[in-house]
Image (tube, rainbow, N blue to C red; front, top):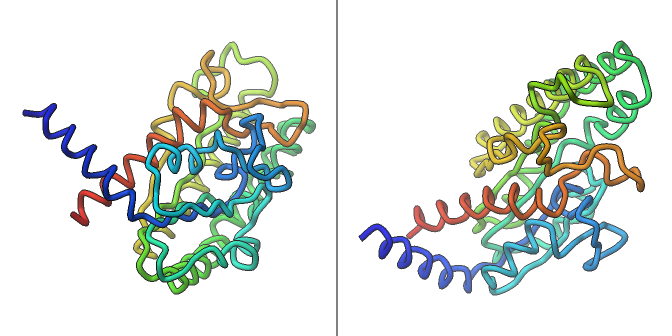
Length: 259
């Protein structure tokens, strides 16, 4: 009976996806930076290996618009990506906030600088996340709602970078690892609250990435890489095994609730 219900549910989800008009917004964690193949748009580093494209390939929605772009901030989404939304849009995903807080420069400071400079950079970013980011997210989310009033919105967050037990981890110090993980937690907490306040779905990827952080021996994230832009982004496996299952579960739950 359980198997039959699962099969019926999957069939229903597949059928309902045929009526979905899906738009993927956001930054590099949605565009696919780090997947190694930017076959859909090299300038924005959009990849068919990124979770939005993989979800669309698996579910065959009625339409799919891939607007996410590497380096995007909330302002970039407002000014450059929301033209993809309309009253017919029924599903929207987004990762956003990390670039607003300057986490790219924070990571550079932590890789190249001292423990003290890393901690200072992280604390400055956390202060921005606590004081400035909530307002930016609120403005963005409300505008998204006005552009796509009939849509279900899914906000995804960012994984922690390092395992907790990093005793044998080569590279940056334990102090830096702890600081960076704390920054990710602060960012995700603020993003989750802003999503809830907007009435958006929140898909937390941290549990899915647990055991697959850097230094785990089975990481789904890049460490420092050449080219440098891939550093600390999900690999292709991070998208297919990390982000995709969490996003798929969120959309399935929303479809079941609507049904």
